[in-house]
Length: 295
Image (cartoon, rainbow, N blue to C red; front, top):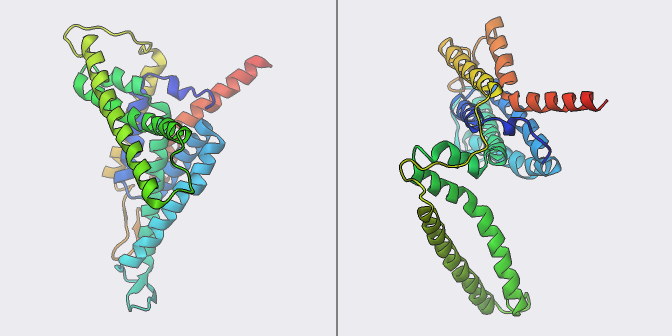
């Protein structure tokens, strides 16, 4: 992953930004805002992960969104504009197609932003934010967030050990493969339980969660972090005011109707697109500064 300036900001700013963009993407079913969110999230994901992000988008996120978009018209036949009839006699409506496209955009944008969140908001940032307020919850959630990658790594190690003993070969019968699979599963289950108990005992021995306990942290609230928090609150306020003014309005049934594209509505949509591009703008500005200093 290339150096990302946004991930170096205070965890509070990172967390609040992702909460706002993911929340708006989930609860505001406006195709213009969803498209802006998806494009921004994909751009940032590519900058974070490079070719891996492109592969994940083309092979995972886009097919998932297309499947969702195609699935909606097959089961939802609402709408007054009939395009054709299925062999079953149910109609295919323009409204259901548009609703499916919006659902696909929603799914793609949320998944993409969560992928960016996982790359930026590490476990230590989560514990830093929530460890003092809810120590037990912070510990449990941090363990859960790091459990999947650790489980996959440990599973590979166990399979390699099993293979060194001559188990798990393709030429063996189904019964033997099932037996070996149960053996691997048993080893992983035992490791998971022991690891959870050891982690809890270790944190308890270090006084985690006790009143007055201090912890070392590299995070400090600087001026740039305060400016970022102000920008995030401004973006959230803009979304709230735009929603109250009807600029985010969109409906699919019984007919498709989008909020009137007045000057104010277009300005808000441009503002929201720029807001979603905040991490990308920071990264581009940092790259430009480095190139200028190097020249």
